[in-house]
Length: 122
Image (tube, rainbow, N blue to C red):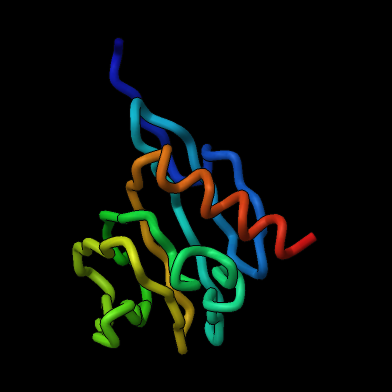
């Protein structure tokens, strides 16, 4: 299989709960370019998932702003502009400033989370 590359603006984009994201499956992973407006709390969109938290791991790069993560064990982490990140399963995200990031997630883990969030937004 040949490799692939795209500019973020070339990815199919959708708006979910105020979050703008474009993504595409690359092998066993989904790459997403995500813009999250200030004041976004994804916690309500995760209600009904195990532990009411995202159960998908994400690896990526924070391009702009920051995202605050809270984990099942009560620990917290802030990912800031310019930082590489790993967000393990069992987290939620909240931000107080606009944030833009690129993330890579296993498609089989990400798909149920995205489908769950979409159902709650119907």
